Structures are given as structure tokens and as C-alpha cells.
Length: 79
Image (cartoon, rainbow, N blue to C red; front, side, top):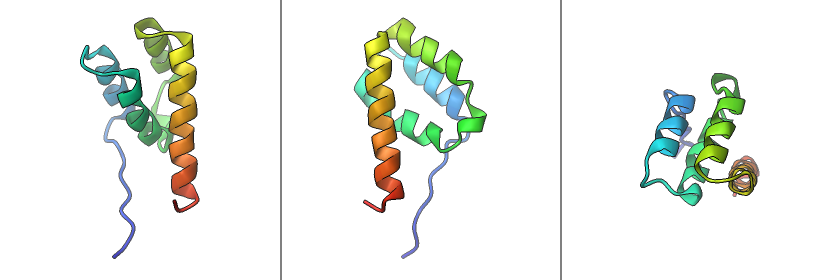
């Protein structure tokens, strides 16, 4: 079986929609943030990061970034 590669059609829009959704938690946003990191050039990161800080806090942004990068790095390492 071949590897499956998932990309978001609109990573910035998806992130902003999830941030605006009251049901979304900072923890649940990590996966979407990780997927969006794969298409970095299609995301206005300052805008997304400001939205995260506005919804949660600077500490939440740091946790989301750290956990998302961990996911990306594990995937790159084949784990």
C-alpha cells in the first residue's frame, strides 16, 4: 500500500473557521495547524496566530505550534 498524503484545500480558511468555532479546543486545533504547516506558503501565519492569541492566549499559541511541529517531525521521520 502506498503512503497517503493529505492536504487541506484552504488551510488558512480551515484554521480560521476552526478558531472561530466555539466547539474547537486549542488541543483539537493542533492537527489542523500541523496539516497547514505542510502548505506554509498558503497561510497568512501572522493573521492565524493573532486569531489564536485572541481566542486563547500566547501560551496556547506556543503549545499549538510546538505540538503541531512535533506531529510534522514525527511524520517526516516515518513514525
